[in-house]
Length: 589
Image (tube, rainbow, N blue to C red; front, side):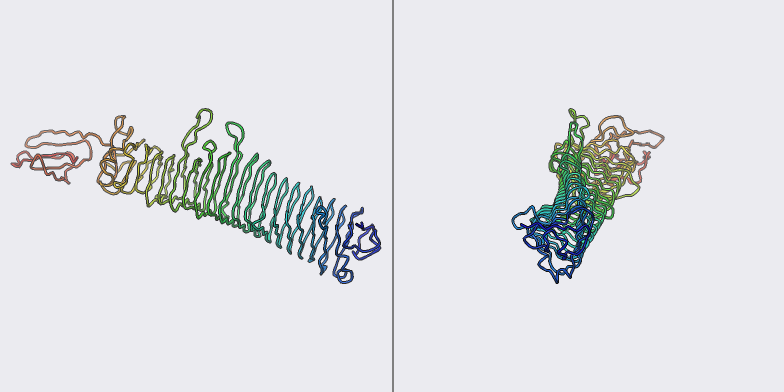
């Protein structure tokens, strides 16, 4: 193979035979180089293509040592064909530049930008099978036109800035080892055969433009990795955010991410007690995320999803993995919507300070964190509902739910059933839930504020016969309408007798410490059942009858009844003993 290098100390036009070491213009069988010392620019233009088209084909081209090759609207394809010698192709190194303006370049070999710069503003560039950009100071800029390659990698502190045009890679697209890719505009198209990976001390920043890919993995295998999205659109089949030995984040501040299948977040941890190495997705207020499903995988460590924008999942939210490393779902604002909410072996804590959590089907919140060091700090999974709204057709609560105090009433919409087997804590709040089902031993704790909690009439629901519902920190009135109110339906038929027998008030305020059975009032409120104290005082021709609670006084002329209410009978009730009628009195059972 003939070696033909530029020998002039200054730049010039490509088609100057005197500038080349072989004394002739480059040809298809030559190894061509612009590598001599001293910064200079060599230009190929339309005149070269018209007068010396054969000089546009070569076997290899090297540009090095701060030199510049300028392709200026050439009008014909510049062809570099290394054949089976794949390591050859186009090499740009040591501060050199290739500037392509409106020209076509076809590289059958390896495009290597090693500490140099490749700038494309128009035209069509094809580099098959591979392109590598690496080394400190190495950069690639795509302003316009199209760039196609097979294997594409950016590594070792290199940078890529895409302002427009279209980039496609048919095999792999790697951003790795301190590299940075900046998508300001244009398009990235990656077919189903392409692996799209951002990992290890690297970042992909999208401020605009469009990404289309089958799958994307952001992975902190050995160092931190991040996808930083502040605009544009990203269309994927699957997205995986996976921590390894370092954190990894998908920080979605603005723009649209649309995932036709699954968003999966995987966490990691080290040491014991586990030190969190987060896999996290952060959704900003101006961002929109759409996907079929969201899976938070805590098999190896901690995960987090923070939402302040619009997150819509047409399928399910699912938590899987180990209970030792709970996931965090933080809803600050916007909407977080899914079909069903499920815990499948993992544990998730929810903190909602605003926005809307909307579950079209079943919101199943379960899980138990076993703690570390022999169970220290062990507790159920916790849903801390401070503000915002919750909508779920059915709620299955088998962990801990804290409904915080709020001046806003009826923040929860639950038209179906509400099943409880955990702890429900209610602050100074007014909320209406669905038909109540006691699925296992459970507690409703009314200790923080003055709770007004209502359930739909539930007498037709099947409860666990061996379970007990405990009512703690009740501060109401045994006659109803007190500071704390707990209702089932709107009348005395909201619960059946068996259900009432499964409810116990624990140390209710104003009564002697102990456990008290429940009774239901005619407005649906349940209160502690206390044995009424009936007293009779005599006066001339009268009896003064008094009793200790709000029960209704009934009367009958016969001891066996029937008894009817005395609706105007207030305490004390006066009976005229001079009447000839016989009268039997009792308190309504």
